[in-house]
Image (cartoon, rainbow, N blue to C red; front, side, top):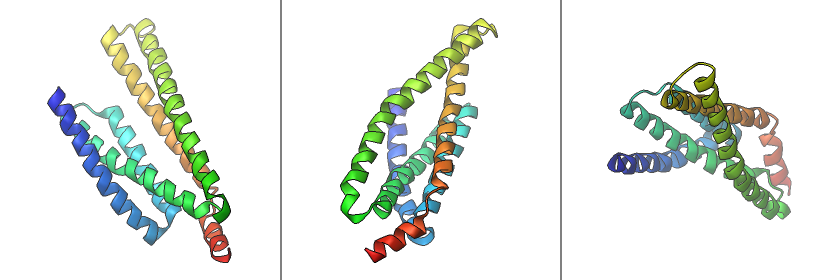
Length: 172
């Protein structure tokens, strides 16, 4: 209901603040690459837990974890952008980050919706589930697609040489 939704948003926002603060400290202790990998790993855990969630309380806990991890992904990735950007090209790096974020805000929900729709139709037409059950099953399949995208990000992250970027900044 409306009250639960408001409480859920507050929980996510509070854990978001905590995540930005604590995962920001991890950048100083472990480096940006490791802190970002931890943030993405936490978000993958949250996505996998969403797949099996069955109660409101469990969902609220997942929201808290997702808020914490999401802040880490956002704040640590911006920090990494600052570390990796050559001093005379930081505007280009942050501009690219902005364009990528805007593109993903369209592409992600579109792919999620298309996958949820197709999976729901499959569950309804092939498996014989009722409309509501098929829709819920389709949403669960689409949730897993988020984990695939997050894991693809980790694969790309493995190619980043943070130490070389930090050394180049010191020499500049």
